[in-house]
Amino acid sequence: MVDYPSTIVPGSPGGAHFAGASSVRDMAIDFAMAHEGGLVDHPSDPGGITKYGVSLRYARSKGAIRGVHAAILLNFDLDNDGDIDADDIRLLTPEKARLVYMDHWDRYGFAGVQDRHVAAKFFDLALPMGYGGASRVMQRAMRACRLDVVEDGYVGPVSRKTINQASAWNAAATMAAICAEAAGYFRDLDAPDFEEGWLNRAYHWPH
Image (cartoon, rainbow, N blue to C red; front, top):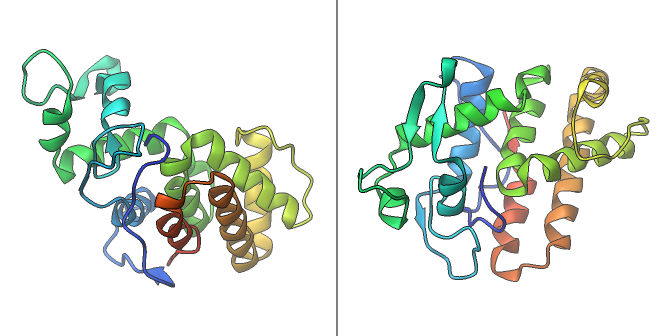
């Protein structure tokens, strides 16, 4: 959803509690949004101005978020001036950004990950890394747990089954492996302006 290298607000050490979340999706979105922060316009970010983790480049590429029967749930031309620009990103509200997150959760099938904390972490990593990058991290973590999985950048039925098996075996060990692989992924990007925040995010566990 968010373009590399999207700026984030560094997460606090340890976990975050979302006792009021009504579903796994809500908990995962709350966890991710706590990392994304508000309005950021960093000159080193190729995605352009970003708010609540939604970049201008992403908004332009999508145009709109659509629901059942292609009904428009969110038109990114928020000021109705015929184009999508920085002004529209500035008008984005948390409620509208949440529609983007919900679409992302449903589109990539994160609900298929049975452990709610592992699902939330996978979802959270998919925002700054993209789905392919986060999928590779998950697959590398499975290999670190000595499970046989192909690292192809797509968590399909086979990888998802392996993740669920690992989580059922030892959820804490699975999460530790995911966090370690996420940190390695971020370090390899060689983006010093963003690395500290990314590493805080990599090691931050949902609870």
